[in-house]
Amino acid sequence: MSTTVKKSPLNRAALEFKSSTFSVPVLVLSGNVPDVIQEQLEKKIGLAPDFFKNSPVVFDLQALNKQGLPIDVAMLADILRKSKLMPIGIRGGTQSQVEIAASLHIPVYSVHNSFSETGSFHQDKDKTEPQPETQKTTINTLVNHPIRSGQRVYSAGDLTVTAQVSAGSELFAEGSIHVYGSLRGRALAGVQGNANARIFCLDLQAELISIAGNYKISEDLQGHLRNRPVQIYLQENSLIIKDLV
Amino acid sequence: MARIIVVTSGKGGVGKTTTSAAVAMGLAKKGHKTAVIDFDVGLRNLDLIMGCERRVVYDFVNVISGEALLNQALIRDKHCDLLYVLPASQTRDKDALTQEGVGKVLEDLSKDFKYIVCDSPAGIEKGAHLAMYFADDAFVVTNPEVSSVRDSDRMLGILSSKSRRAEQNLESIKEYLVLTRYSPDRVKLGDMLSVDDVQDILSLHLLGVIPESKSVLSASNAGVPVILDEKSDAGQAYEDIVARYLGENRPHRFIEEKKGIFGKLFGGK
Image (cartoon, each protein chain N blue to C red):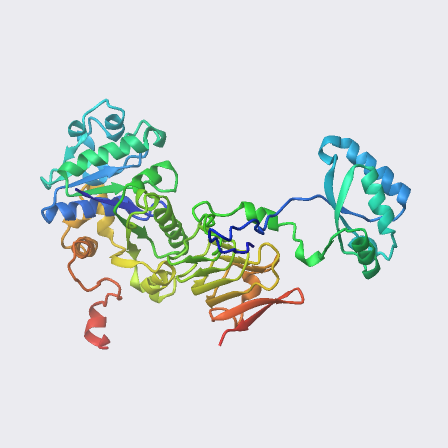
């Protein structure tokens, strides 16, 4: 998200923080023998040397740690650099692995914040609802008309709809979604991984609801919470649907 | 300037052409000079419903491609002097329509006519898109069943985002719901969505309900717009719709179940 700086003539903004998404290859390790890793890595890189040359890479140790196989993070970083890769992050590491990575200035990514599908959502954004690019102060989106079947709306912040949302439509928000009407379409909040995003609606009949990649489909939404005003949030990786009142 | 009305639905077979013919005839009978255009290039039907199929010489595509003048292609209706039909071409396809060509024809018609009714083809492709693109008002024809309602909803989305009015940020198209083939007894049995069910999903201004009626089929086969059959329930329903569209306040009819003779005698309330 962007920060805002007051633009008075005397106090010109010299910098600005912006949020961007990049597609970075993730190296998922399933074995811990250094020679084997090096050999297989070189084979893979040999398939597309130009693509991998100086490419940033995040290495994922979750699978390895699940099997209880230890690995030396410093050595792994060396192997990657020797192969002309630039390790820019570690994911799914144990406490000690994370500490070693930090001492090597390699940033730590959490497993839950990185959903492979978020990138594609970003590209799917509705062309009829462009993000306000000139107005950096407001990234929230307000829609005052019904969202019909086949329509898509993307908000870089919160998304508020003051009318109904029809079946067959899609709402995407990097923040929370508020629907002051019936929600019959798909609502995906926190599409860039914000697990604190929530979905609020006055009448839950959604085809699909999702927060930070955790989703439930219509079939899972049967029962007493249907057709009611509810809020939906994420708690320990599961979607909680609660009565609003 | 003429008011351009598109009769659209998304789904096929719901009664767009029947509605176009009836509404155009109704407007003309009220004294407004009206043109009705068949946008269904390649699947021409409107001329049959209007009973002018034997008088087609030139068509919409001929006019767009400059092979005929608008006046040569317009067919005056035999029942009403103020109504003209612009038939579609049967030998071409929708690609023969261009946005500039359609815009030019509508602009020329606007000088002379009060209302222009555009009979949209089914689907959401080029023909349907061009039929609605220049519209001021939209009659969304829907049958009381889920797939028709879903398709109408999709069409409403397209009306509000891809029309000329939407693209130029003008006042949005006025959207009206025309619920056709409605059968109150089947609603009662739970076989059919009710007016309220449809309204709940589409939340749209209801212009009128056309009851399922044998008179629609016989009128179509005879080539006479059903609105001219003043004794039929469907004809009266279309009469109501035209009157409401022109600003009259008429109560809705044909929503309740018809009572048979025994129901009237013993039913009470």
